[in-house]
Length: 297
Ligand SMILES: *[C@@H]1O[C@H](CO)[C@@H](O)[C@H](O)[C@H]1NC(C)=O
Image (cartoon, rainbow, N blue to C red; front, top):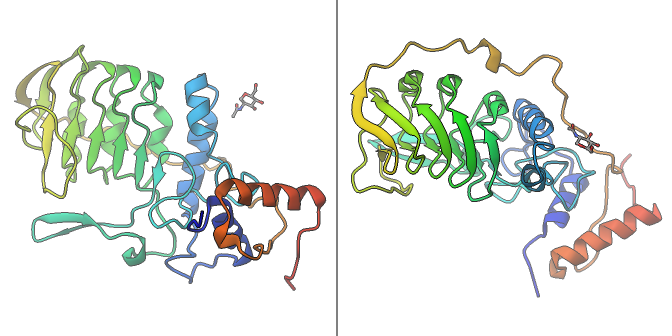
C-alpha cells in the first residue's frame, strides 16, 4: 500500500535535512520551552500508573518509531508530531468575532508551539496533573472521560492562552476555582458529569451553554456546561489572579534531547511505498548494522 511519509520516514527526513530556525514553517523545530515542559510532564507522570505509562511512552525523540531521534513533539505532519496527545496548531486568530487556528503554515515565530493537550478516554487516574502548568503555550486541555479525582487547581488561571478546558466525565471534587474567571480567552468550559463538583460558576467564564453537552466548533463563545454535577448554575465573583511564579519552567529542568542517532540517515529508494512497519524495520536494521550513511561535512 502506498502511504504518505510514515512516522519513521518523516523522522528520518528531519535528520536528513537538519532543521534551522529560519526554515519556517515545515522544518521549524518545536519551541525549546515547550519541549522542556513536555519532558517535565512526562518524567513526572510516566510512572504514575500503567495507563499513564502507556499514554506517555511515545513522548521521546520523534515518537515511538524513532525514540533515539532529537526531541520533536510537533513533528512535521502539519499540526502534530508523534507524541501522543500533543498538537501544535499554530496561532489562535480572532477576527470579526470568529476564531480559528492559523495552522502551522501561517503561524508566526521561529518555532512550533505546543497548543493542545488531548488525552481523553484513557482511564487516566489520580489528581489533576500539576505539571501541565509548565506548558507555556497551551490553548486547549482535554482530559474528557478519565478517572481523575481531587480539586481543580487555582493555578490553571495562569495559563492565559486557554480557550478550552474539557474535564467532562471525571470525578473531580470541590468547586470551579474562582480564579478561572481571569481566563479571558476561554470559549469552552466543560465540567459535565463530575457528580461531586458543586458550587457556583465564576462570572468570567463563558456564558451558560444550553442543551447539555457541547462539541467544539468554529462558533465563537461556545459556553460553559455543567450537566450531571451539583453546580447550582449561579454566577459568583471572580477571584484575583493567583500567584503564578511557580508555573515558570525551573531553570534546572532538562534540556531537549538532541538525539543519539547519527546526524544523517538516507531514506531508502522507494520509501514512499513503505508501510510504517517496514520503515521502522529499515531503521532498526540500519542502526543495528551500524552502516548508517553519513554525508555531512
Ligand atoms: C520509571 O520507572 C522505571 C522503572 O522502574 C525507571 O527505570 C525510570 O527511570 C522511571 N522514570 C522516571 C522518569 O522516573
